[in-house]
Length: 383
Image 1 (tube, rainbow, N blue to C red):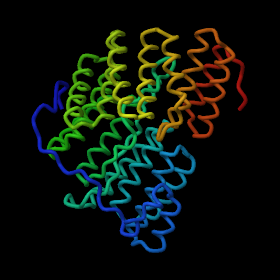
Image 2: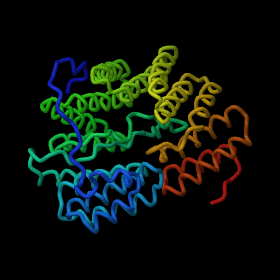
Image 3: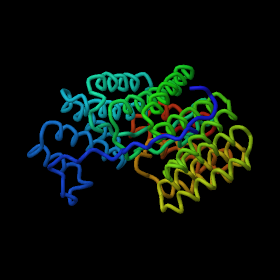
Image 4: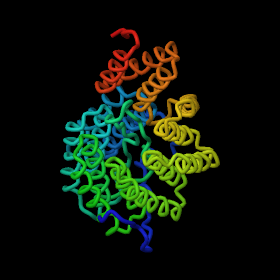
């Protein structure tokens, strides 16, 4: 898509309600949130597609609860159970790609996403919604010193979509992996493709997501005016759709973009607007995310005490669902800020926490970053 404004044409809203729950789960509200019990019930009473979906949803719930290692194990199990079921396989491979991308393994993540696309090719376009939409949510800009964890999207969108929309979602996931790998031109081509698919389907939720990713990709290459144009278009669509968390995320993204462009006051105004929406909605996790981007904006504006204040405010709420991968990077950022402010004891403690997080998640890039900050003046941490 061109790098200018989009989403201004009125379109028909599609009914994006989730597909009916598996029959065995109907009227069983007492087991919601108990993934092991759900899987046991489906193994005993469910049909093969329902059982496979149950395994996949168990892994998703574990991921959102913050148990990364167990989510990996359960994801592998879901992929095994879904081997002959392309609908569940497509969603499970996408989820496995998100998990892999969360460790910074862009090439391996792309293989997972491509496997999801291959599974989607086996599904009729008219099939009912089956694909669970989610994103990594966070992007770590390792080109910065220190690396900056930036919240770009919500993690779990709360939508199930059909094959054509799913193909667009997977392309946006590949686009993020390409951007993180430094292949920005490839990322733009994938985003353009995804946006065209969403627009053809009159999927305004999808269009807003693609516009947001376009904006963040433009920020990545320092095209700040064009980035704001896309993020503003995403914001407008989300305002029309009354998607308050997504609207707040668009504003938080615009805040980081403004700070990157040197417009500190504008960044604070947009970041504060994002935070206000989250607070008004009673969205505690969302408020923590908005606070993180305000911290990043203040750091980019060279206001280190303010950045530390917003970061500490956010960390009071963590861990939040789906945000555990970012937690190590946030503690790493806190170690850097405290080091710059001369508070060495606190910096050491934060670096130790970051190292523990990265070790538990197998985040090799994070472990390397911790060792780098140690060489800059902190004592060596235990390995």
